Structure formats: C-alpha cells, structure tokens
Image (cartoon, rainbow, N blue to C red):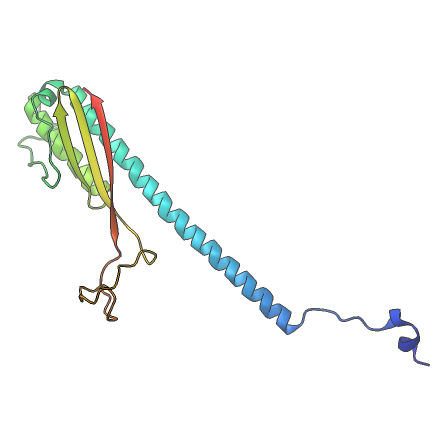
Amino acid sequence: MNYSSEFPCLRPQPKGFSLLEVLVSVAVLSIGLLGLAGLQTTGIRHNHSAYLRSQATLLAYDITDRMRANRTAALNGGYTLDLGTPPVTPAKNCNAATCEPGELAAYDLYSWFQNVTAVLPSGDSKIELNSGVVTVTLQWDEKWTQRHKPKKNDGDDDDGDDGNNNSPPPSFTKRIVMSTEL
C-alpha cells in the first residue's frame, strides 16, 4: 500500500530554498547595500559642505566683531582686503604688546586671514567698507568626484578623451557674502 498516492497530505513537502532563489536574494541584497553606501557617501559630502559653510559664516562674524571692537581703524580703512591679495605680515604681535588701532587692525586682519586659509580649502576673502556698512565676502573650493565628469573635446587637456585622464576632480567655488553696519 502506497500511502503517498492515497493520502496527498502525506506527500513530502519541498523544504528550503533552491540555489536560484539564494542567488536572486544575494543580488537584491547587494544592490540594496550599494545603494546604502551611495547614500552614506552623499550624506558625508553634503555634511562636509554644510560644515564649510558654517565655518565661513563664523569667520565672517569673527572679522566683523573685530572691526566693531576697533571701530576707529575700521572706519579709516584698516580692515579692507581684496580677493587674491593676502594681508601683509603685521609689524607687532598685538597679543604680546600694546598696539595702536592701525597696528591692531593689521594684526587682526593677518591672523583672521590665516584662519580663513587654514579652515576653508583654497579660502579667500574680500572686505569692503562703504558708508559705515561692511561687506565680507568669503569664497572656497569644494571638490566633487566621479559624478561631474568634464566634457570630452579631444583637445588633450587631460579631459579623458584619450584614456589619459590625469585631471583632478572638478571643483566648484562656493561664496558667502555678509553685510552689516559697524
């Protein structure tokens, strides 16, 4: 007597996964993990961008506070600065000696600009004073990778058209401008 043909509920049921089902689940899982890694990378990049923006804002507030503390030198143009022109090294270290307002302005501008170049990648700044209103402009470069590729034009400037792509990732200049009254 064959019980499995007479009683279908006693037939052995298939158990476990087949190899194909395992491969499909591994593929789906790996695609999901790659997506998570991409999200993590994007999150880190945007977090760093926000960090640089907040540092630039703090630096802008720092120099305006220094200008307000030394208002006489600020109104006489002691704190003006152009893009691409670093301030000269001050004659005195005003942390160790007593300084006149002009000397303090030179020291403040120099030490502040050192912070700008230390904190912001390729950091640069411009400070203008017009009728008691100071405008502080800070700019820096942010580098992006892989997603923004240069266009290929066969001009052989290492733009990737001939397999000799030695160019650095493109960078984008970010800028904040803050204006306030002294």
